Image (tube, rainbow, N blue to C red):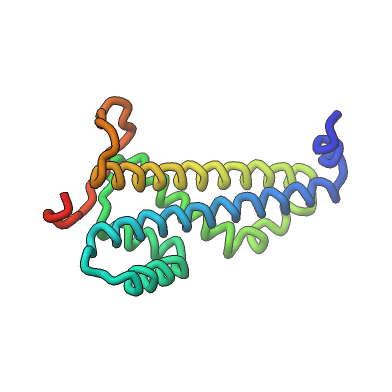
Length: 174
């Protein structure tokens, strides 16, 4: 049996696994925030052609300091995702990330006391991590698609598109 599985046989090992999974899920929440920030930075660069380098750097710094909820609100002002599944994923990812950051340990105190509870926590954290990973990948895909739409490097095909987005970009950039 591997060391990781052996670790799960003890309370201490189970607790360590929960803390490790919490850290990994929190990391994915930060990846999502960074992906949203990168998308908004790209949008800002594309839509504000008259900005100076200092203006762009100030905007980027400001975006990097904003919460996931604030970033999602900014994104919704300029980018419309027409697929309900993707919109729901983003809303759920925000709720999960906020729960993770602000309530997880406070609301799950009892689960830490039993083996069954600790394993349930592991499952919950893995689900949250996967949800955040999927949302991050989706935002990354929107960023790449936006970049390609403005500055195509190869012929595009609509085959295989999983969802569509509408981006409000000034006419002189398209």
